[in-house]
Length: 120
Image 1 (cartoon, rainbow, N blue to C red):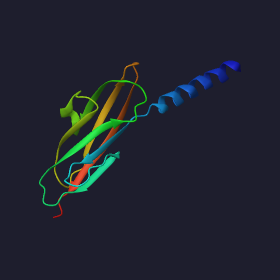
Image 2: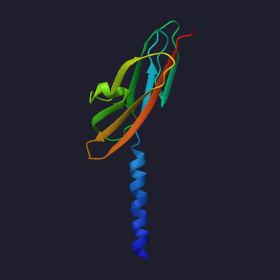
Image 3: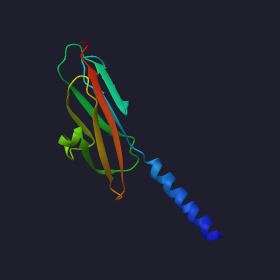
Image 4: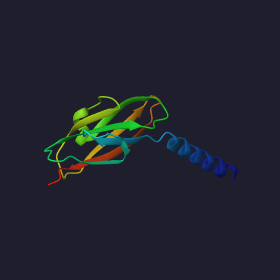
């Protein structure tokens, strides 16, 4: 019986330790107005624009990051660090994802979407 209790406590503590380092992805759509990062999704109204720049970053990591591998629409950023930006078009949802590799050998994933409308 003690073995089952011990195993259960180990699993629970492992889960709690993993979620304690949960990183998130934040983004903003670059405008002339005040740009502020928001978690998981960002949106802006950019009057008359044919394109805008979406800016993403990893935040909230509680342990040292070794590398970030960007994916989906952010794949052009490769392993360029904890932030990434790229051009987006109006009325399209643009998902950026990342695999965050920590120095201790663990990893986690995060994602966010960015979009904007041009007022037409």
